[in-house]
Image 1 (cartoon, rainbow, N blue to C red):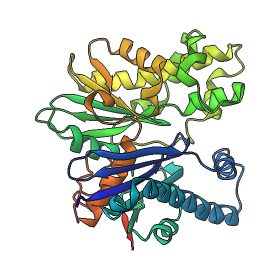
Image 2 (image 1 turned 30 degrees about the vertical axis):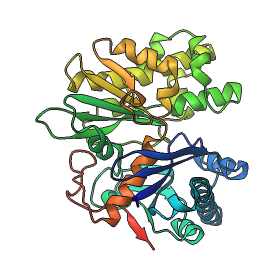
Image 3 (image 1 turned 90 degrees about the horizontal axis):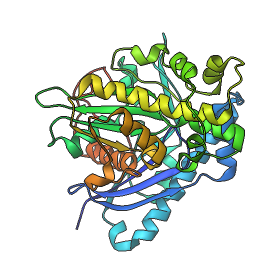
Length: 363
């Protein structure tokens, strides 16, 4: 009998629910799949992100609906692995859907929708949820969580950067004889996705093809790179709602720029802010692993490799770790850690207090 854990994750790209089942002792991925949100739920989430939803009953119902969508995705996975393996799934971790995250406030907050009790009721398996709120209440950033898992997977290597490019990009720095460092660096896919949706009515720029048809607008890039968040010291985190079309429009400011040139410039924005952090903290000629949706964008990966020509840039798949399901695997691992009573030191990643349990147990 093995100990398996199931992780449910929908990140800031909001492109569906990632489901991963892992063997917690070998870190092997047993099952991985992305389940799209039902159209009605996806539409409601987009309405929230555009600031078009204000009714408390709307949010309360959406909390239940997202929970049921997560439960359905979990049950699909459990059915597909079969009854024998299903019995070995000891815990489910649910990240929920982040709809807002703001820690620079006199009343900081982070909010993930998706009622975990719906998942427990549907599966009968203990569920761990709300991995961020405790840290925020302690004065921490509540994000990113990924560096904890990156260290677990790659801590045996020396002088390594792991970059997760989802809606927001974050970086983990694993350096010889130095403390673990991890923080959000800025936009990943979020503005690119919003821009291509506005002009081409596509959820994302497949293979970066639209960006590849454009040219970088250097003045626009230079202006965006002056955003204060990029020079802010870590630990730091940022929400997708900050880097939206309103933020972008404030820099375009009526300038006549071809839409595809804006898209090309956004690719370089994401690559530049990542490359700057790698160069600031990691010696040349070392490995940079990339995961998240950005790892599947060949134009973004090519651009990042050009900015980091003195480094070895590859997707985590080259290290036999799924770049697509790494975050869902992380949530599964964190849930297992929680039921095992394993604590984590968050000070160099999210701030707040050290050696604490992450997540709330629902059973």
